[in-house]
Amino acid sequence: MIGDFKLYPAMKDSGVPWLGDVPVHWEVGKLRHLLRRVTERNRPDLPLLSVVREKGVIQRDTTSKDENRNFIPDDLSNYKVARAGQFVMNKMKAWQGSYGISRQEGIVSPAYFVFDVTRADGDFFHTAIRSRTYIPFFTQASDGVRIGQWDLAETRMKEIPFFVPSLSEQVAIVRFLDHADRRIRRYIRAKQKLIKLLKEQKQAKIYQAVTRGLDPNVRLKPSGVEWLGDVPERWEVRRLKTLVRRIDQGVSPQAESYLADGDAWGVLKAGCVNHGVFKEREHKRLPGDFAFDPILAVAPGDVLVSRASGSPHLVGSVGRVSSISYKVILSDKTFRPVFNQDVDPDFMVLAMNSRYYRQQVEQAISGAEGLANNLPLSSLRGLIFAIPPVEEQQAIIEYLRGSTEQLRATLAQAEREIPLLREYRSRLISDVVTGKLDVREAAAQLLPEEADELEESLIVNEAVDGDEAELPSDELVEEEVVA
Image (cartoon, rainbow, N blue to C red; front, side, top):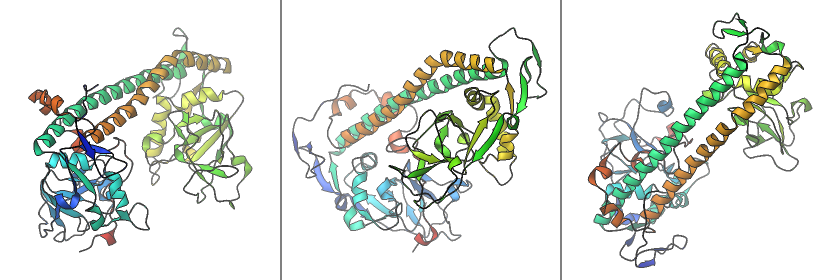
């Protein structure tokens, strides 16, 4: 995809058993040979910076609610100055890769480390140290009792090995990886655009079928609902409460942090359904002494509706349970409508994942004051659907299964390729910065415009192991902001 790679002609033992050999002319040093800790304060006039796993050192947006989860004192004079080219580290989250070379001048938390970097090009050091080769070293150098807030021992950190080629070779490596990264980003963007188009095409087919039916010449009548418009003459416009015998809602136990297994029971999380797909493993183990109503047990054939989520696009997502191998119950964040006999559950799953259902859900959520990203039961019961006779519902189901089969297959393939591309990128970076691949000749053949084109490199600006990292950024609690 990027080009042919060569191996270095002569290698030597790296001294790290699981890493193997490195090029014979590379220096095998330790971070103490490259880093010198510095402390400069009393510059509250400088912009506030954050250190995040996904991007390294970035300017903090103090106007964003998401960026203001952490305590920021009124007096910033004790904050440390980080200058462009210095290495900044959140020592409580170094094990996640929350560190990097700063690209601008600013100030960071007093609890952070700031280092001058010597004997290494800043871009090379940033790229290498944030690769998946080096992050495990920082995990080994961290300890503590609070998972997610392990403290880095500076003395152990400075003993982490670092492999240093010549400066000219470091520049060549960065040049090549910048070029390769842009190529991979283009591939990923192309796949993402394809996925978006396929989803839009699939959604358009479903929307047309569940609101107008399959006969383009059918007689229409006003639905009485402005946003729905006309519907086929034989169809009924009904609220969900008239289509169900009941709607079950689960409980909210203090579940364990791991999955159920054996004879243990689990409770489904809100993410158990997403875009019409049931995800069986989205559950947590119930405490052994927890008592619950057996009616809450989930069974194949159930239709589940997500009530609440940290992500707005998951709220109201609907899926049908095709099979299940764990014993799980509904959580309080999951609804289970039990439909009347005049409604095919598969038709309702299609209708409830269509655009016009989503529009109603978004309006219901925005109108539920104090219930951000929550779909109230009363709102769910009041949602409106265009309902054909049962035989037409079943014809629509069969049509959509056949007409979207190729779309689903192409979509699934494109979605599988994106994580493979990200894995390829991560592995390529790791192999190049540890001397497993010799890219000097490939870098020399790049034209200047190829090395410098487009936006800044992802190696500098994006995640180490993927673009969808969910871990929170720069998470310092107040007591960690110390002098």
